[in-house]
Image 1 (spheres, rainbow over the protein chains, first blue to last red):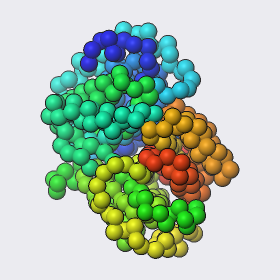
Image 2 (image 1 turned 180 degrees about the vertical axis):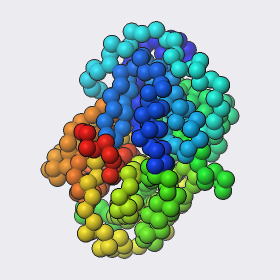
Image 3 (image 1 turned 60 degrees about the vertical axis):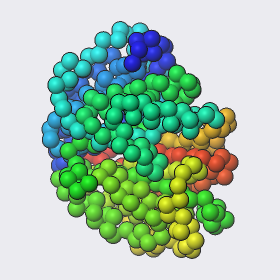
Image 4 (image 1 turned 30 degrees about the vertical axis):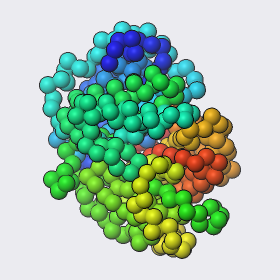
Length: 198
Length: 198
């Protein structure tokens, strides 16, 4: 990911929910959010989801950190949400676009290795080339060797969480260079007991 | 929802995950899917999500049934997924487009009353009017009095599950009459302890 991309003034958002399949779900959610350094993103949580906004580099850094802090508990957890850029709207969080590009969570988490089976879908809005743009994003996943198949309405990634998140970030960032308004849904699992059967 | 809409040959899909925030998550997921009559939709489950395909009327009927069967346990559960129509692709499930329009789950579930706080987003693809089309769908939610606000990247619905699902179905169906390829993300909660604080 080039600095030139992350350094633009285009604010990225990620509205996500963290779902721990556990009676301890409140502690896991609060723990993961609490352990994550969110100082470089705008953040607001409601009773359904959390929204973060800021520079792409920090939105993806925080997303991965929330996932890893929850996944390292060993419980079956899922991070599910939508990244978005270029949606006409208001200016909450614009002040976070002036921070530097140093990631606040990467150093503490780079040693954690967790398989991150993922389904994602890319929606380049208002552009007749959108199917081609999706195909180009899939090429990025192929180059990174995280792609593991197409399914109805989504594509599948498998591999270490760091590689999977890097694929998602590159796919999203490359697409938004070509079209103004892009959203990307992600469904990122960890520690699923179903994995043994697949 | 008019029969004429549901009776077209345009196949609708819903890729969803059911997340019970409970140690008993496997039993709740299998129970909800098992209690739902899925005889009129194509269905495939993998380790991350389940995909159903068929006529709109049955896809929404099954979606609501899965949610209600899980929610009636009293546990905090979430149904999260994406509806889609008009995506260029293959033909799995086309045979289900010839079934009649009688809903298989409605009668057994119409008496269940559960609050269904929801965040949803509509993505009409490849159409420059897409922001207007989203606004028109919000008007449907206003008329049904389920809308409870706009948030970053989504709109919020509140109310009884039957009213919320009806709003989602009407919004989706009305939009796909105007544009060929439409997706709609939904994040539908039940029994969240956070509701007490909001």
